[in-house]
Length: 434
Image (cartoon, rainbow, N blue to C red; front, top):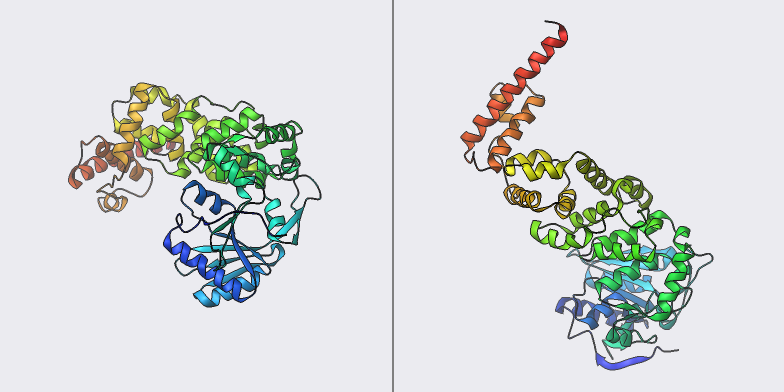
């Protein structure tokens, strides 16, 4: 059965970048030459309809994605990488871009949370397996009718009405990671849950369906959510649904009151998306961070961020920063911390400590010392801890703008290193009983 056509108008050309449109037209022509039908599907179509930037190009093929990928590789001078088990391929372009291609398929879930068994199918069946109606959208890529919207499940209407609607009542039971994706879509796209979808999601959370999913799969979805500007809001929403503990977080999160301030912290301190993600994770997990990061396979950076934040707070860093006379003094407390931890501390701090963090961040941004460890060695400082002491002293002075020239920094570093070297020598003598 052919999918329902929502409109005969081209919904892609007015909204996609010219280079993306040119590429998709080639995809459509090559598919037609092979008697295949190709469609842009899911998120790219949704984002085009919303007027949002389209980054990824996801193409579904009625027929063989492998055959189309090989034809495109030859036509474009690209490379096709195949994943036979899933009927997918990736076309890797010379400019570093890529197009993901998949054979249209259906999915059957043997048990809740398990990976599905896939079977080739037509486009309508492929769209029916998707998580939400707003992602069950497609646009033709064939030369005739290029860009025509195909909407068999009413996703376009849901977009217009601001609704997030699952396609069937077992959606969250089949794949509980959709609970995390639901929270992300609601926050990113400013949607609200459709009534039945809200009921199904609540039943899945209360039934502890998330426990059927591996930590690695949950972590993959959570990481994607945390790397968006609305990551803190996503985490708060998951906690409000009662889904936090299944992700290894405290039920109510550790510092929920600080999470809404992270977006502003990111602007003030000019943070990266990775910094914001680590700060969100650390504020959410607290002392449970290392165990949660391990369970979710998030990697050492997230575990380290949570550990550093916990240790810094236990060590009274906020009080110390509140009393710090300048950026140089603050450096002793902040220099070794991950940037995400500094963001988290900013959200937890009061006025004086917050202003100290801001001054330190501004002074430290782009700071390049004019003195190096090799300079100190050439001046007679033996390799060891004294080198680090000297460089730290020069850095503090540079941060406070009390040593701006290379000569001033070298003098301060050398003096501090010699003093440290002498102290170390005295300590060694005492230990030896001299």
